[in-house]
Image (spheres, rainbow, N blue to C red):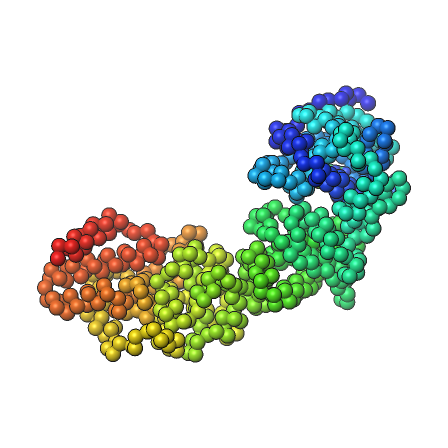
Length: 625
Ligand code: ADP
Ligand code: MG
């Protein structure tokens, strides 16, 4: 060999991470073995996959295994595998730098957590460095499959590492840990066996110690359903999902018939951080006859189920299936349909326990709702699984079936209000009349809500109707008679409002489409609504923000003839309607109320200073008599 040993410095971030790792809590150190065994198993998976295309790569044996070896005199524990191996470049880039944001994210998480819990280290893609929890020196000797040369990587984890030519008879990797003085327990067979059984039983390769296999070495998804314990599910989930929470549920089945596959899928117990970053893929892995083929290939699951973690193992796809071949592959399409149907039926079962189901919905409901319009075949089922806040249950979760069962006699539509902020929409004046009549309104505040609602005609024959659009139709609905309510006023207050409405129309001119008496207001004086033929106010604002709609539809100003302010204006007009000064003051009031309605709506005023001047004038007039 001509090359000499060369010394490199760790990337600054890695250096910081290593400092934290070296000072981690004694009790959590045992997870290092899980991380190193998991890397060894990944390395074997990678080679097995590549060898399906190029047999030469697995020359010298495709019996993959992980071997643990203890040298008590030297104080070393070595983890060896016959997987893909690493060349000089790999050693530097994989074990010296972090391309991904994993290190920074982990350091931040650790520094923020009180317990300095290291056990989640694998989740951040920096599991290798956990070796320095137990070792004061780590020596990696590796030979990449298909290469003749071997390389040694060595470091004491204090800022620098060394890379030098080395010798290794066959492909694969040895990770030799020179155990710290206080970590000699990891030289004991019983301790190692314990850790492997606890943390690595799901690994599908044999993990051997002095020739004896410690784990079951069968992939959990190939076992019978009853044969996988909760504990094993938990560990396997953490392994495939790179997660550290517990699964909310495990869905494990084998499909037989036209196509055959096994699937073991988990719904995570907490919201995954990549839910709305589709580029960061973990997702569900595709295997073909026990060989790992692809991480989350497009088309294996519908997009809205992207929170699922686990494995689908096909019997029918060719082993050398490429990413391109997977696109529009008929077998994959059948698998996707089967998996989707199964997952939806599991969720339907789980929904029977509302408290438990709420946990799922809070984490993943926003993604699920995309399925209502994206999944042409199952959209209706997804709609049935959806849960919403409503005026009757502002903190609970309401299904559409619940809603429909509570509809009032004469109520024809499912009423909703959409907006950006749940607190603001819950206080919207548009709801007043509905609340007063005891008519439930759904409160929709996820951005996705406008999309599914725009594309969904009905649920169980009931149309969806925004309370900010068109007529409220409240007179057709039989209200609740409340004992504390005064009997209906003899005269319809709206009848007296005609002249005021005509004056408002003149004063506001083109700014509004119309002015009319409201059915939907109870406490507020005015509100703005969209005409039946126009877009819902919130939807239009959203489309404008996304530059998909220019301009601004004119709104209808609704006034509440039963409100004290409006009553006073009606009276003033009746008394002094011929007086131009009174007319001018009432026109001012129209502009003031219109601007006020826009503020409540969350709109920006065209001329805020004019609004301020009018308000000041109105106050002065009020106080002067
Ligand atoms: P992750 O496993 O999440 O990628 P790690 O810090 O555990 O992060 O490992 C970093 C990288 O080092 C791996 O992605 C892999 O490329 C490489 N590596 C680690 N151990 C081995 C091994 N035994 N054989 C081959 N490559 C390995
Ligand atoms: Mg790893």
